[in-house]
Length: 291
Length: 295
Image (cartoon, rainbow over all chains, first blue to last red; front, side):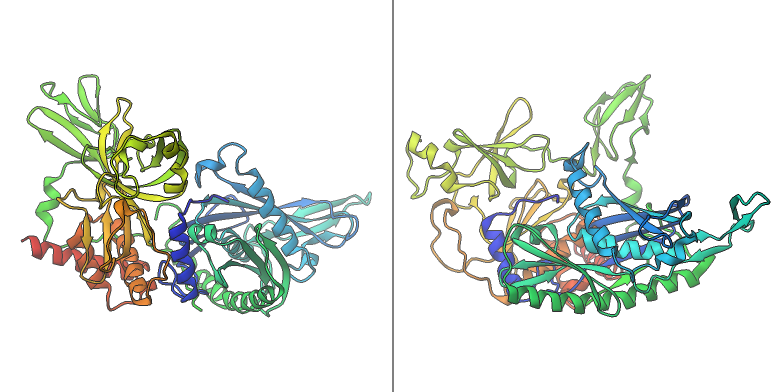
């Protein structure tokens, strides 16, 4: 992750602040920074979303393509994740510098979504065993200021909500050759049910307490962090420990409980915001990148 | 636990109704704009000649001194001048000198002979001093120093040969654009709200709790790791958010503007200051007070 250098005295200041529940910008230990979410920003994708969480900017684009289902599960579609760390974010990402981070992020996303409940994969099936929808989820990191996982997961949820997959039906001609026919109406689309899509919460351990939504300076003071992906019902789909330091079992339990609580509370405002944005329809003033 | 999500809104430009004259006098240009077609002028920094026409190469304000035209950019790397106070971070420890990052085009240099030795002795630096360099300043440490001279390639040579310069202790660093820091007689201020501020000319602003009445060791060698009190912390966090709000709206930073912004932000919670609408409200009030103060 792009890192900033902090001096020992600054680290001490940050740690004492976290202990007193007053971080550098006045937030409490479990407060998020100011978040702005917008969907449908990239016109040639089937679904897209852009989120800015403080100074972290993430853009997600989803394209639906027809492919062959996996042999083990012939009646389900699947998702493919790719995270690209743009050199805009920090000069360290130039060339192949951001590849390692990108691979780490994609692998975690695979783990988070690797269960039957997050996205209804059966709805992505067109013809069992022969063709299905494959959703290519591409994540682009535009600016990096800590807390990438949370931002990416919220953006993915918003983009999946925004995704419109064209409706298709199978037609068989006389020789029995199946053909996939797209409906004529371009607005005839299928939407995904994103209720059970999880959101990732990263908790960084600083001193004896943990913080949610750490900035790069706070990250430099923490030795270990825990990633928890939580659905709106509070179900945990993936837990991962990052960082070189150690966490003792009590802290892991405490952090998991806090993560579940924080993660559960993320979903309701997000869905409300997405519904509100959709209800604005054509009247919505698109801000995009030049706001 | 607070989560606040919203749809993005187009950034509004706040303008004061009274300060129209201010805006009309400024000649703002973007790269490629023709400044003048008159060939009688000498071209300064930020300009180039494009077929007999003087064109701007950076985005900023045109300055004219008699026959010299130059463009002062708004967002730029720090260009040091002798006598400036800067706050920097040590990036490397080399033989007989430290490399300091000061938001300029090249890393600045702090020579071993330009620092005060602990105990305040004045003697020639020996090889033992060279080996003990890392005990004094390590990679990642923050210092505040003064620019002593400029090398021919543009790198700055710093010195900390005064009791007010040296290693910085506990506090918060805020990064703003160097062009927003106003040049003043002194850059060290003890604000009446209860914290102290160092406005580095290079855009690095250091906020720290006002030191109590204790005798200072030579050159700020000793950094206290005692926990800072909660009230001081709140003041510093509020000042930090105010500085970020001022820099987002391109308000010139000096002790008065920072203080007015602090006072305007008191009715709000510290973490709310960075919300766009509250930021606009605070900046509008600050600007109004500043115009009254100058008028």
